[in-house]
Image (cartoon, rainbow, N blue to C red; front, top):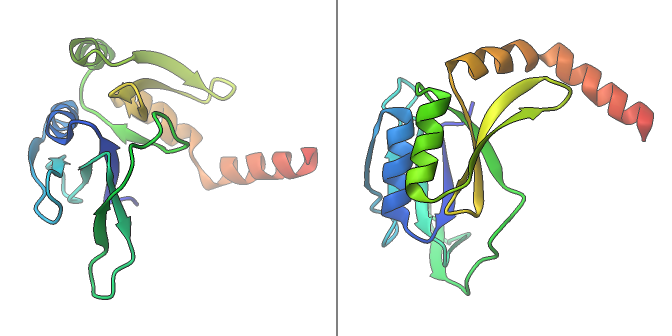
Length: 158
């Protein structure tokens, strides 16, 4: 279970407000780091996505908190992504993406395993949004048995 995650953004407030809208939650400044914001889902798990300035890097500290420092600009894309639930419809999610000027498109994963809406935050960071119908597809697919079968198949092909 993931309770919170952080992503680098060029405009942390705008991204946090948009993510909060997709969840039906709220956005607020995130005090540990200057310029950081958080999108709060408002669910019973305390789910949040922290949005950090794109030039902020966390490194191990000598106390209980990581150290924040400024770095050079990050690459536009990375291998990072996450899938999150939304109570909104496909049309509502895509409309939000269009409003923000961010790529938003429905895609099918795997061999018709499940669908997602790819929302490219600031056209650089991938968030896969799952509407209620997509969440049901995902839960039907994402079982330990199916993952074991896929892992065995991958090992056999290696």
